[in-house]
Picture (cartoon, rainbow, N blue to C red):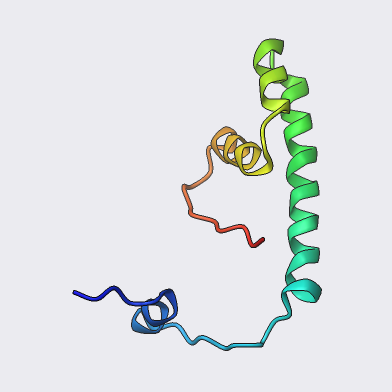
Length: 86
């Protein structure tokens, strides 16, 4: 069986793929920057409230995706899959 491209998979799943609709640099990068800032601030608040400062120090050195995962787990929100655009 020949694997299909992600675009073809989206089409097969009923999505419409519109190429060129968004400019990554102008439309998506500002959103990514804003979300990174927001999650970093939320992580700082969470870390200040942790009773175990050793854990707090170890989290501070994590990458953004790792911090995001920690915050998602700490929020006890519904599980989801998120792709961060680079």
